[in-house]
Structure formats: structure tokens, C-alpha cells
Picture (tube, rainbow, N blue to C red):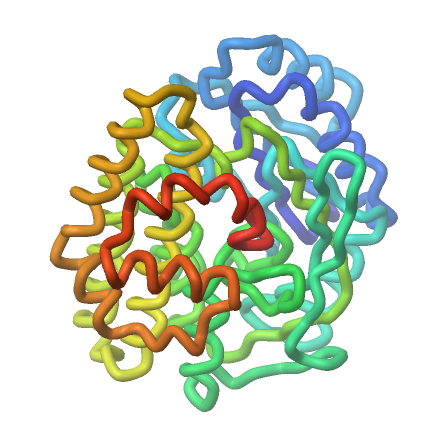
Length: 349
């Protein structure tokens, strides 16, 4: 580790050989050079392990750890255990940073002594870049206990192209290391979806002050293999487990009143995104019927039905509002049939 490092940057790595060099080069080329760069090879089956070793041979700031595949949450948790700097930053291996990203975040973190500094970012599609815009103008500091409702909304509700105040991810922000460790804030191991949301609910709750910057520092790459576009075989189970984790958090900390509206919004939003991904996989009459049945069974889950009953459709974009009513009136066939039209259900999807 670089002895003067103020920030440990943790990169969990699995099957991203096409994007890894650009990611690591963007970290190594930061204007702030004093960094502890932790690469966690999560049993990647491609050439990523060898690439990581080569990066470490070229740069003494890089430490590489090779592990059996246990998922991104376990990899990030392991990285936190190895981190020795004052601040922790997470970078996904298929994304990249603006040249001054670390300097901007660390400078603001030191200046404000906030536990979390969250910045804006870019959505990067193939051949297209969109800057997310912030609800908050300029730099704003928030005392957590006085702004719980707003901050919880920022964690649970997904960001779109118009709102960059999103604490629902672990990337694009910086955390004070000692408060994460003192409060035992870790990612839920085994959860393939919404693990960042569960992590940040706890992170926000234990913080005193959070700073939000309307400055884009992070490039979030959208590609065919992105986690946000992948329909896992256990996708439904992941959505329901995430809902259970959020529900457990609400009960443990007695914040049902603050969180429940956003909790229901999240469930319905997950249902909408799930229906789109089902639609994308339809290639025949048989797969069309199978998609309808899968959506019907999932939407019938008590937690999903409760979300549909309780959410106010006015909180949804016009596209999502249309799909919400299809869900409400159980028009699953229509949802699957027109699903491909709604490629823009969410900015991050």
C-alpha cells in the first residue's frame, strides 16, 4: 500500500476482460496519485487474473487478491477488510472514472468530514453518453436525522437520466472507512440484485452527515453483460430477498413510516424491469407463453400485490405508469407483447 494513501479503491473483478484495462487505467491515471488500489479477482474464468497480476507488476500501488468465486458482495467485503486508508471507494470493473474523480471526492470528504460523499455520473451506452442531472443544485450537505425521508428516497428509488441524486449504488461515491468498520456495514453475501441498496440503507442510517455533489465523476457502462440488464435464473428470488432485507431494516430501526412508500415503489419498479427482461427473451410462441406464465406467477406474490395496491402511480414516469396499469389490471399478455417498445423503462436499465 502507498504509505500516503488517503483512499482505498476496491475493484471486484469477474469475467470483464474486455473492459478491465480501461477501468484500471482510469484509476491509475488519476490526478490524485496517492491511492491504495485493491483488485479482488473473484475466481474470474477469463484472462482477468493474469491481467491483474500484470497491473500489480507495473504499479506498486496495486494489490491483487485471487479468491474462489463467491459473488460481488463477498468480493467487496473482502476488499474492505484489506483496506487501510481513511476513505473507501468502490469501482465496478466494466466502468471508468473521470481523471479527477478521486481528487474531487477526497477533497470534499476531508473538507466536510461527512461519512459519505456522493457525486453525479454519466450513463455510457454504446456510442452514446448521457449525464445524469441532480435534483440538488451545486454542493449540498445533509444532516441525516433531519433529512431521513429525502435520503432514504435517494437510496431506494432508482435514478433516471434526469436525477443524479442516487445513493442506491456503491460506485460514484466515497465512504469514511472507520465508520463502516465500527458499525459493521457490509454487503449482503449471496444477493445478486440490490445489494448496494441494502448496504447503503445501513450506511446512511449510521452516518451523521452526507454530502451530495452535482459533479459527474463516474462513467457507468451499459452493455449486454451488465448486471442491470441480466435476467438471472434466480432473479425473482433476488428481488424478494432484497424486499425482505429492506423490510427487516425498516422493522429493526423503526422507520416504516419513512421507508414504506419507497419500499412499495421499489417492488413495482422491479416488477416492471423484470417484465421488460422477460420480453427481451421472447423468441417463439412457446417462450411467449412461458414469459406470460412467469410474469403472472411472480406478480401474484403477496409482496408484489401489496406494492401494486399501495403505490401511487403519479410517482412513476409516463412510460412506467402505462405498464403499472397493465400490472394492476393483470394484462400480462399485453405487457410481454409490447415489452420491447419500452427499452427506456429506467435510465440505468
